[in-house]
Image (cartoon, rainbow, N blue to C red):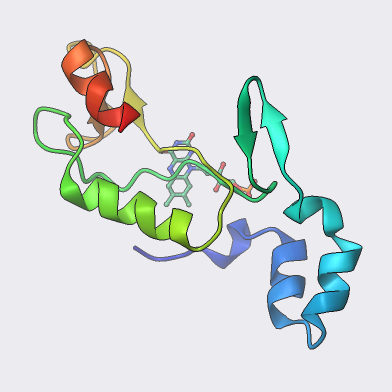
Length: 113
Ligand SMILES: Cc1cc2nc3c(=O)[nH]c(=O)nc-3n(C[C@H](O)[C@H](O)[C@H](O)COP(=O)(O)O)c2cc1C
């Protein structure tokens, strides 16, 4: 998957290329502080925007590739990941033929793991 540089927030680019990362962490200290969303604690304010990777199985269930992709982003330290294109009702439409479907308990269980 190609990473589009235009979608990377400027402050993260500045942090990545900064010679003094300690100073940047001080400047953007809230970025690395935890935050609560409802009763879930998010470890930092770095958010991965939804990006469809069209890797679900033909029936819409989550694939090993979906899990590997999102696990890799999480291991990089991203505090909050929004999963891309997901159909809430597979019968009426999917944005791509292999996007995730979440319209039944059998699909939801896998997403909760
Ligand atoms: C390859 C690609 C796939 C995307 N897939 C989705 C998606 O599945 N669902 C969605 O709501 N937005 C999707 N987007 C939009 C992004 O989530 C984001 O809103 C957009 O890139 C603008 O980000 P920015 O405001 O940081 O520039 C996608 C963007 C890209 C580049």
